[in-house]
Length: 247
Image (cartoon, rainbow, N blue to C red; front, side, top):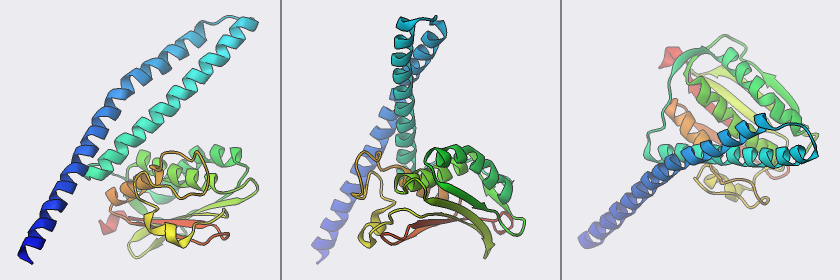
């Protein structure tokens, strides 16, 4: 029995070292990739500014725009890889400042509204009924909501609805993101926040990093995140951020 326990501890230790090494390599490679990708994006932007008028120039402009958009997508993925490596190592950086929860939410909504409009969704926002201050990283807060809204957009058909609400409860501000989309099967819910995991609900839906990063951001704020969903009945993500007075 003692040997079995020792062997199990040895295997668990080796597995953890392998995971730590993977996250370290992932972070290094992602960081090193950002410079050449940024160079491609910058060079294409400069060439676009130098173009004149004419049919040939229009064709060149289209190709350069394709290159620029691809570089931007690559940069976004690399930033996600860096973040997910930081989440895995427990070192995701957040710069916490005191914010009014309503103003923080409304500022984030203005950034996200064009995404919901482009997807053809009916978008509603409910702010806290009472004033509440939270300690939050404003940039990370937008990233968190962007990941949750982006997930909703993927699985909600045009004409559907998306609602973000917030309210004060038990020393926290509770935020909820509810969509009227296809919903999530019960067997998929436990793995939803795992890194690189995707439910088989469609093709070409990204790298499976957004929800893992969202979870890491919430936990770095001292909160928690969970999901409620049924197939055909939509999905609601809930997360909490402690109020400034409760921290």
